[in-house]
Image (cartoon, rainbow, N blue to C red; front, side, top):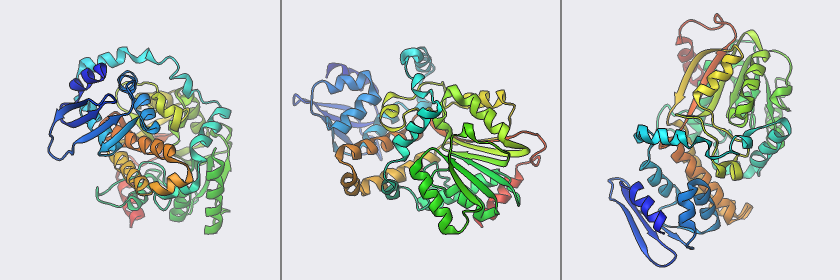
Length: 408
């Protein structure tokens, strides 16, 4: 516990953390903080605390999943929030940022884990998105939107925020009657069906998940629009034809930095001359760095969170014109907090579907994601692209007007 004790004496200044070590000793860190409940944990073995200090994300995640890190007061989100709040991204010193930059090459395999060729991309998608559809039903909204919602009011329900997200994106697409839309990474079909319902657009949604494909097609058939809203199991690199609009929501995180330029060039080639594209993706503030090992090992193999500069470099290389950029700073944290609480409320059902270890893995993933967007480097970017600078009105007023009409 010596290394852990030294590290956490420096780290935890605000809020109370109590740690019961495997040898029976108890350690206290921090001091009371208004509005923040104390957190208590117990380690069941002597080796885990040292591992947590040396490899925080991987070791803490595995220890929680395996039951070697036990929450005795507060849940895993309370612990991760306490730790990250004491190391909030906005509060880090320039010196610490420079030290982090110096440590960048420390994971020599980090970049290789995100080299997503077509065959590997399909395996990576199946690992996460081909889980039981029932699992996603338990914690997502009714439309199964598995991406950042848009909270026009912090107190809005998850379903309302996801509906508003679709309107927010549709408004930026500058939709007109008769347009043909490509939805790259269409999920379970909700965005494609929404765009057709609201505007009459013909939509092609593409995915690499067989489970998502089956459900998306069934939804289109049930809605009687399968001739206007089609779904295909195909890699974005294999799509042909021209589209008036291209939208991609929550898919860019699976492209990988080695293929960012390929993605941008492909999207430009698919757009008509006066076409419009909207890219909605998780983004990273500050320096670029590999995805942490725990996430790529257990949750999103091949996943990578880009910085805004990486997105810009790729689109500029493809001669896509950036027409608009919006940073959703807190919306995804609010979204995932809904997912986390819904997951915790349905614990018994998830354990019955899988087991206790899977439940703890999923809970750790969601809890860590919430704190990533509230305290750490994660945000969400919406970037609008055009091929021709005359393709859109010269002011942004059309977005607000279209959004008002769509939310009606």
